[in-house]
Amino acid sequence: MAHIQSAIPSSSIPSTARTARWRCFLMAAAALQLSACGGGDEAATQVAVGGAAPGLLAVQPAVPVPANCDTQVNDTQEKLLACVTLPGVRAHQAALAEIAKANGGTRLAGSAGYEASVAYARQVLTDAGYRVSVQPFAFSASRTLGSILLESGQAAAEPIAHQVVDYSGSGDVTAPVTRPSGPAGCEAADFAGFVRGHIALIRRGGCDLPEKLSHAVAAGASGVVIYSQYEGDLTATLTSDAPQDIPVVMVGKAVGEQLAQRTLTGVQLHLQTETERSLQTAYNVLAESTGGDPQHVTMLGAHLDSVRAGAGINDNGSGTAAVLETARQMARVQPVNQLRFALWGAEEQGLLGSTYYVKKLDTAQRAKIALYLNFDMIGSPNHVFFVYGGDGSAGSQAISSPALSTRIVATLGDFYTQRHLPFKRLDSGSRSDHKPFADVGIPFGGIFTGAEGIKTAQEAQTWGGTAGQAYDPCYHRACDNMANNNAAALQTNAHAVASSALFFAMNRLPG
Image (tube, rainbow, N blue to C red; front, side, top):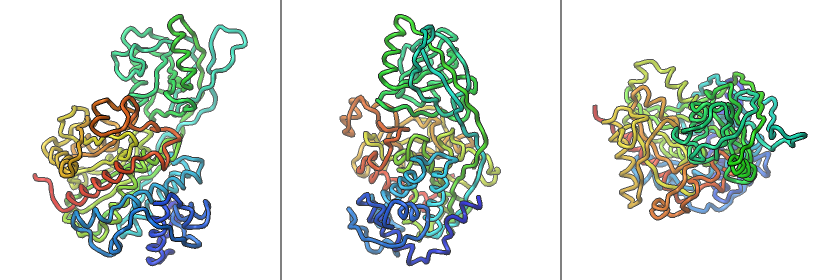
């Protein structure tokens, strides 16, 4: 942890310089010209991870920021929402994008890009005046040593282009290929009649890959081949709890569709993967307000990491940026309840950072957390405004303190209702960092704009966008970049984050 702390010594940057740096960052990000704050990519990256920039170049912001946001106490909805602006949120996203660009295109937990993201977030929160800590934790990282995929039974068969999925197990299988009856394999019923020992050929999309794998394994698949919905897309990830004896690879759209056609007459593949897992270190970033009752903590969180494939500017640079900017603009507020902001590590590997945090809390510490609000993917380009929580009204996978969670869900829904915006209740499930809190009975809620799920015709009529396409077509792909956000959705939901943070900072749940 020492190398992260030393990377961003806040004492080395005077407060006036920090203010000037942020104003430049804000204006440059509004024009998507982050390098203007330092004179080039290298300098821009230095700013992104907390270093002093050699020079400043003013770029006119797309939306003017109220002149008094740096000094006023944003203790009303009107003042706070005027200061939580789209350019402010985009500036944080731009910083994360530049960090990824300087570190192999990723902010994957355990990578240099992730450590720079931690340093950046820590600096922003420290500059704002919070008590900031960085919590290290060990996690299992995945590495591919080798792989083979080719058609069996053909002399001198050409290898089939493929990519081993992160957290694939090792295996050496030669077997017929079978598709589930539902090509996406998102339901156990899709594998009814699947022949044990066959290799499952599954189309990407509709649900998370770990869910597909669990159904395939339960049906007796000896290996899994995922095929893309998009040309050139060979990136996918499982989580660290994936079986270590099942090989899982991904192939392109054209190859997958050809294999799918040939399953009708019979096709056999030789699938071999050699992978290993090793312990690495990732970090949670935690920031507490100096004021407010520490016996009643209002907690907000978002995951900071991306997948290996890209920068993760919607997943989850959107939630991270909204939480950071809300924290900045609430720094001078004296809350009734203590505020605690969390940016989680290794969410993409299986909610590892938030799970570690919750498990480290003793009973008394857990009891002090009045509620947890989760913000994961809030700017999807083909968005729907989803609201979820632990009240159980939209599913029973993650019910936590139903009566109190009902209040949270109602408050989140009221934000949209008061603005005459439609929203939709979503089964909270177990896909993001609210789940560890739900598991120990902490009331929770959150907002979401959709991932790989497909937008319905009714949803397109209500929210606009394109029916039949994913809410985020760049989900877990390299194209999840600065262009991969719907500006109106992001601005609306950044206000939803700020509005709920202020409300629950100033009001207590009953009981």
